[in-house]
Length: 301
Ligand SMILES: Nc1ncnc2c1ncn2[C@@H]1O[C@H](COP(=O)(O)OP(=O)(O)OP(=O)(O)O)[C@@H](O)[C@H]1O
Ligand SMILES: Cc1ncc(C[n+]2csc(CCOP(=O)(O)O)c2C)c(N)n1
Ligand SMILES: [Mg+2]
Image 1 (cartoon, rainbow, N blue to C red):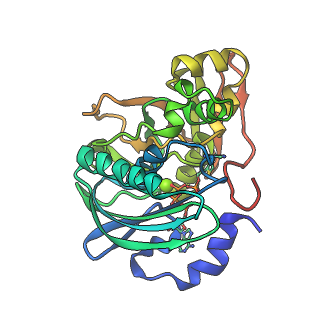
Image 2 (image 1 turned 135 degrees about the vertical axis):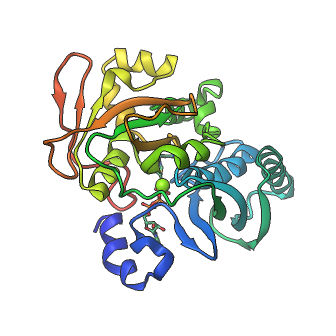
Image 3 (image 1 turned 45 degrees about the horizontal axis):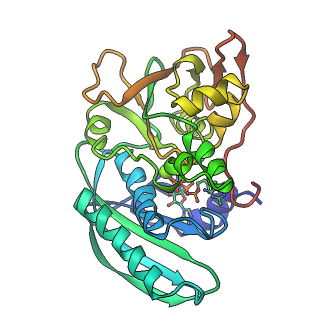
């Protein structure tokens, strides 16, 4: 059974009031926005990845969920499973990475748990403060424009580079360029938003399904890095749009508004006449591509 089905069938019946029925990126409780992300060796990162950057990435993938909910990351708790093969020097380097990210963001460590285990696992629970109204995956409306921060597809290309030992080209995988500060624009403008972790298409579908609208993406407008443009020219655009690990903010917002944060680019539209949950992509050659359901799933990928 797939990841989302398992959550819906087995975990949703256990969910409390602030859980948003486990249909969103973060919970709302105790006056804060709360999220959790786990990184597991072999699943989310490679055994040889720089350990200080891994620490920073664990904070960033959590911050990414809060930013996309219009919440400013404030504090976190840390669960660490530390294998015997990684010595004290590595532990010190890991904590140095946490310190660097804390200094960059103002994040504070509130507590956690440290144990031995078979491989490195990093579990972070992060708390944020809302900077405006509550932003959900639902709330998008026909006529909204779809906007995204940064570039798409670099997480995938950088992971491929890391696997080939090309450290320079792997930068966006070691340390995703999470749009710190974008929570203010999300709060000010979004009808609905989330972060892009499972892939642009899959996460656009989450917005379309929860908002009960259809969305058309304009592939030619999707921001790509130099490496992304090269890959796209080699026919890999579909890979870039489905690869995941982007950690950018994706929002549906009202057309008439001028966006206060220039990191956002318009890449699509919630169009009248499309069925709820539908996602289609107008490709640069003018063809309409209707991607199959998909995206990252820990139980089927
Ligand atoms: N083991 C679990 N226990 C309780 N809730 C869970 C569990 N796993 C997932 N959820 C909840 O299910 C919902 C969807 O989770 P999912 O991981 O797809 O979203 P996400 O956290 O935004 O993803 P990502 O980590 O890729 O940004 C969220 O509300 C999440 O809190
Ligand atoms: C070694 C290695 N192999 C593959 C990937 C790709 N990957 C893993 S999990 C995930 C989706 C988000 O996960 P989650 O839903 O758990 O937040 C993606 C795109 C990686 N990062 N490292
Ligand atoms: Mg998310």
